[in-house]
Image (tube, rainbow, N blue to C red; front, side, top):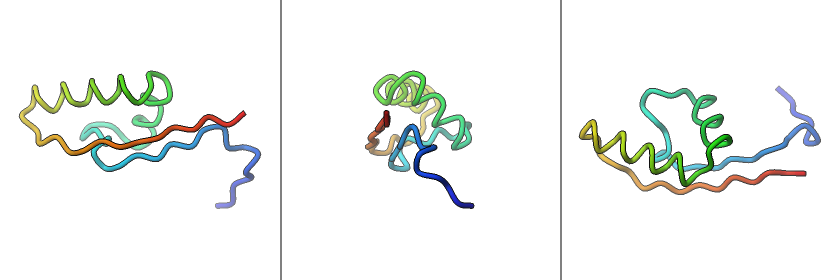
Length: 66
């Protein structure tokens, strides 16, 4: 698949620690795009604690192009 760079509006780069076990990649992107990395990260950490899951490091950057 080819992508025209003028169609790119947002770049999201995240480590595997940001992946929620129940969300697809698309759902993860949408939640981060809507709420921001910090809120998504805090919600994911709360989910991990409630479910006794190992919390991995979370590193990410979102760049919105205009």
